[in-house]
Image (cartoon, rainbow, N blue to C red; front, side, top):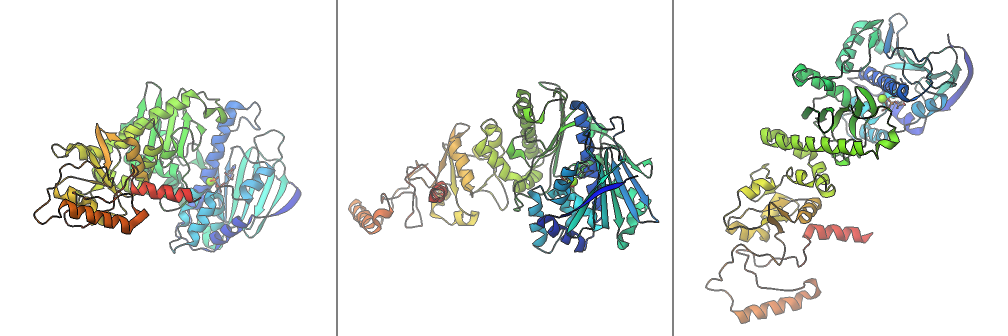
Amino acid sequence: MTGQVKDERFEFQAEVKQLLDIVIHSLYTDREIFLRELISNAADALEKLRYQKLTSQEIVDGDLPLEISIELDEKNHTLKISDTGIGMTRDELVTNLGTIAHSGSRAFLKYLAEGDKKDVNLIGRFGVGFYSAFMVADKVTVETRSYQPGAAGCLWSSEGTGSYTIAEAEGLRRGTKITLYLKEDAREFAREATVKRIIKQYSGFVPFPILLNGDKVNTVQAIWTKNKNEVTEEEYNEFYKYLANAYDEPLLRLHFSADAPLTINALLFVPKDNFERFGFGRLEPGVNLYCRKVLIQQQSKDILPEWLRFVKGVVDSEELPLNISRETMQDSALMAKLRKVITSRFLKFLQEQAKSEPEKYKEFWKNFGMFIKEGAATDFTHRKELVGLLRFSSSRSGEGELVSLKDYVERMKEGQKDIYFINGPTKEVIESSPYLEVFQDQDIEVLFTHEPVEDYILSQLGEFEGKKLVSIDQAALELPGTRKPDGDALNPEQVEELTRWLKEVLGDKVTEVRESRRLSTSPAIVLNPDHLTGSLQRMMQVMNKD
Ligand code: ADP
Ligand code: MG
């Protein structure tokens, strides 16, 4: 029984109103995902409780089993979902269910406002999953009691239009119970068969029992601790979908365990799409940290370097002290060791993929190459491994074909000492520029770069396998072979006269005008007196403007 004491009305934050308006008034094909969102919130709350149990002295209703329970009432058209997780205090209710705390939500609103393919399915990915309840319900109540002794139980209630109320509620056990009063056209969600199918489809891997009208529906298992040959392809994919809030399959998967130098069980995925590349803002890290199947840190910022923020998965290490505080995690030497081992293993895996599944690696490179470049430019610890993963187009690569530095070195011409590269906006533009002429004449391959970061990496690197990396727009270029002037060439005096006249006309715009031996059809070429490539100079000019 819940007795109401005080009843206070609150306005939703403007962004929440806007979001609810869209959620309530859009037409969807996939609104059943609301259940996945509520179950995933319940599971989060249970994980947090499990963690608190390790560190807190006193927990309200400490003996309650950790589980999720769903009760359906077909006659009254309600769906109730309750968990025995951490619950919420009154203040937490206001913050969590009245405002949008995550930056991702603004991106979600923008995403929904743009374009016509409104895929509300993605709602969970943006951290606003709770509000999806209003896709199927015209009234939602939340009864909740925090695990903290002394916090009062509360009843939150809203019709999704503009405001909500909170009242004190007595007699609640620890955790949260959410009641959905189903819309007329959503009454199917009170049917057991429907709900059972949805749970199996989306939430089969929730690591807590899910009871539907009293019967357990899911199989609780931590597949990352199993042997590879005990897990089916389908189980892996389902697990990924659960973990990443995804509706499609992953592009790549790495499941590995190690005993030395640390005991590790890890299951890592690369998604198909890179939302950061599409302008949705910076990705949040996607790997959860466990110790013997207990979640220590969700979406850990410490377990992988930032440039691997696109990776989703689970890392379980027995060495992690269970009661390690989230704050000290960052500084722990153990974490640093763990990060290094896992990062190296993952990079080795990418290297293997590039060899064994080149087409897949190409797909990976297209979507996630930006992160490899970011790493190669910023992370000295792993630079060598990262450089091996870089891919370029080149004067010799066909349409869509990519070249690694190793490929390049392997097919260098006899007598060629350096690795040549040139920056330009596209392959076509570079191919029609005079820089390439002499290299084409002599059949020497030139790598193409299209972004300043690539030039930055190559200049920083300086050399690869003992071969100097040289940008071919450098004036001080040592050419592989020099062309002999032919019959009707200018004599030295004429050359002298022409270059003096050009210098006069061009004035300060150039440092020097010189006779060139590198051109065959173009009359002139602009070269770079410095060691910076043209693209890096342009980048510095932009930076100096501020
Ligand atoms: P997200 O889960 O990405 O944080 P949601 O909109 O799904 O976003 O939920 C918002 C917040 O509300 C959660 O972060 C959590 O703090 C709180 N919350 C939602 N459901 C529960 C629950 N069952 N128990 C405890 N807290 C919850
Ligand atoms: Mg959620």
